[in-house]
Structures are given as C-alpha cells and as structure tokens.
Image (cartoon, rainbow, N blue to C red; front, side, top):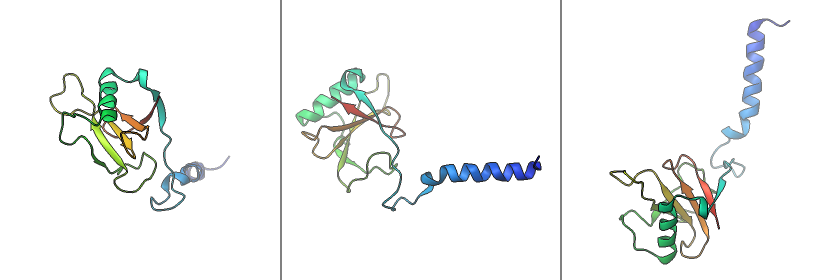
Length: 130
C-alpha cells in the first residue's frame, strides 16, 4: 500500500486533470462555456412572462436600466460581440429594488427569439423555450 502522502498527491493530480477544461483561458478559442438549461415560457414566473411580453412589444419598461447592454462578464451565455445582449428587469414581489430576476435578450430583442432567464442575478441562466 502506498504511503498516505503519495495517495494525497495522486488524488490532487487526478482532480487537476479532471478540471483542466475549466481552467482554459477565457480568450482561448477553445474556452469552455457552461451549459445553459432550458425553461418553457409557461413554467416562468408570471412576472417573467409579463416582462417577456413587454420585450416583444418594445416596452414600456418600468426601469431606466431595462434595455441596456448586458456584458456577459460572467461568461455563462454564449460568447457574442459587445452589445449583442440586453437585459430587462423581472419584478420580484416584495422587493424594495429591482431584485435579482432578469431576462437577457440576444440579438434584436423584438424578433430574435433568444431569451435567457436568471433568478439569481446572473449566477445562472436558463434559455427560455417557446
């Protein structure tokens, strides 16, 4: 049986090799983009469905920040040129501010059909499927 320190080193090496794709450089053409799940429109909270309808109509929106560029700094959405994504507030019942919920639209928000929902202020996303 191998000494404890050798088993520890082996475990560390196995962990590093398994995590290798996650540490690739962001600017690498082979960088890993985390998988984004999906949610049906009918499964969205009522407030998100209302926001999605407003996006498709071109407004009106309640907050000045609705429709501003979403920069995808977290890197969770597919990589696109700056200005491709825009964000919109999804009202959170009982919240005193904009809350954590958003819909992010890709391309032309009126007709692209590319919408993502986050309930946790950009920590995770699901693609809205119609």
